[in-house]
Length: 395
Picture 1 (cartoon, one colour):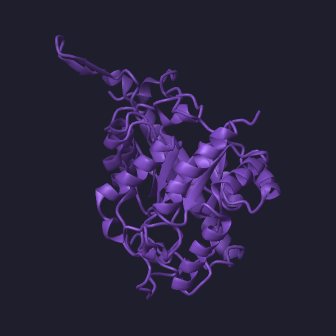
Picture 2 (cartoon, rainbow, N blue to C red):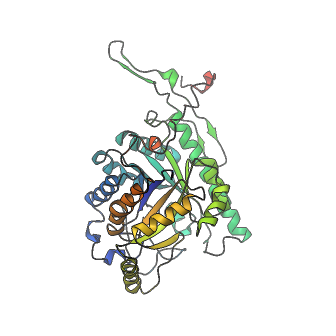
Picture 3 (spheres, helix red, strand yellow):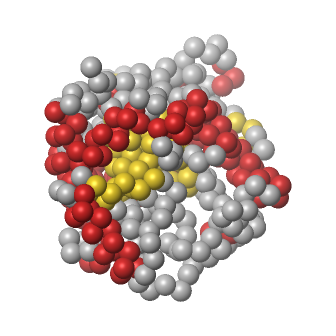
């Protein structure tokens, strides 16, 4: 019997192909409207997918590593992913919402309360895709530090490796601060007893007193502990340093294998409850139609599309074959990046999902109302409840 796998989709603009906005089914005029994102997430929820991720960054989209490019034929500009998720949350009911939020240049206190708020608005369906910014031009938006230009292919140089290592070390501290802030209120800290006039038990609020190389945060948060206790923390990882970061700081990692054997090697390096493989997908009712669709976009873009993740072009049934083959390598799920939106998302929800169900490999209904529950993860205990440390409490 095939064990059930988990499925997520990664939403980015009109799709992951840079010419996708020119595809017949695209809605480029609606990209900056809430209805566009609501429609996409509702379609994903109709397919009982585990969650959606929403792409974001601190700089304008660019094909260059060192700053904005000169292209005017690619989508440029986006809405804030956390705010998109908060807008979508009241109009959906079961699917997880996992916005991308960058840790470099930003403050963990701000993000901790934003994600805690998302967890409240969604009734326990919030997550977070942690993103590190190594782009020099993004640092210029903040003026706090400078970063060297990290060019693809040069990451193995000692200087580049040192920068990358420090960025991920900082990210590890950032996630730790956010997690401690989420725990800084005990679950029953709010009394709300009008008769006695006690709204809160101050003995159940805790200083986190984090003092590290990158952050010094006293706490507590101003937002009570989220419904899930800890919203799901996820991270994309391509190599040894981010693998180590994900294993230490995340609940779920996205990885980019090229084949099943490669996936098996990666899984061995990322000991987490969930490791998802990323795949860019171009889907159609026939393999030739899927190939033709991608080739049309390549022609419009005057370049063959490439990606950090493997690219699949074919039918939903063929994709099901590949997913189940790769699942045997130890992957627990997949994050699919639709090459075209909404076309490839619809092929996932209305083609791939029924195919996997026929094979007994995917759910027929949501089993839980929380994202952690969908993934079979327990609600974490609060780290401060068992501490006999009166000095950590808010006096």
